Amino acid sequence: MPAPLGLIAGLGDLPVAIAENAVATGQGVHVLRLKGFEEPRLAGYPGSVVGLGEVGAVITRLRDAGCRDLVFAGNVSRPNFSDLKLDLRGAALLPKVLSEARKGDDALLRVLVGEFEKNGFNVIGSEQAHAALLAPAGLIAGPAPSAALLEDLAVAARVASASGALDIGQACVVCDGLVLAVEAQEGTDEMLRRCAALPETIRGTAKARRGVLVKRPKPVQERRIDLPTTGVSTVELAAAAGLAGIGVEAGGALMLNRAAMQAKAASLGLFLYGFSPTLGVGS
Image 1: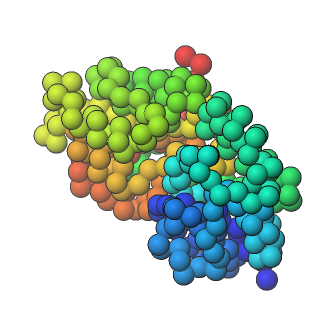
Image 2: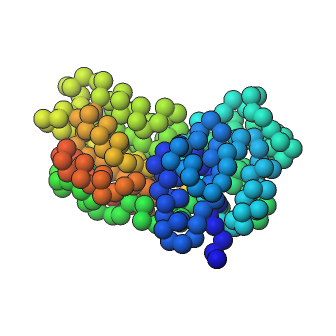
């Protein structure tokens, strides 16, 4: 029997997709759901619930389950570190966590990855656990973008690269060359809701779509944990904001339930497009 995939899971569709794929491919999975962020759809899989500060318990349970490969997936908010219940290993790691957390999310994630690697686990990315989730290159769905929309996409890709280099966010919205929003800690969904509240004079509408959303990895980020993710709700919120399309970095972003995303984009008149990883980089 192959060693089961270890899955440290938060909320959302991504950990569910990874667990389903691990079972479907015959690898199997052992799911540790993080306390306070338990995804209900994962409750039926082998595993248990663990606290964010129970690092030793996580390592012990993964070893007991025979896991070698380990993936982190799902939405988890940054905790209040003073409120965490720590086991001995978690307490020993806390000073380094606190120090790196001040440098940004990527530095914090690298501490976690390093700790599990030091304990013999092979930390892999979500795209390695489920390669079909990776965004392809070129037009994925919907009408082909015009030259003007491709220009907006290039501007948004450049801005997202620059803000990502500062560990701010992974997404940007541009309309007619004007930056409408840059993602920060609120996340992509809230950023798109902000765009929908902007005056229609500077954004598109359902009858006259304009502008694009771009999502791409931060240049500085630990890609094994935090690749940008899109899904059907991303398409719906982009449509509600009057946008004409969504651009994602080909090979650098995840698309959850791609067939449903494609169908939704086509029905709403939005394009989905996979752009080159070199677009907007260093420009």
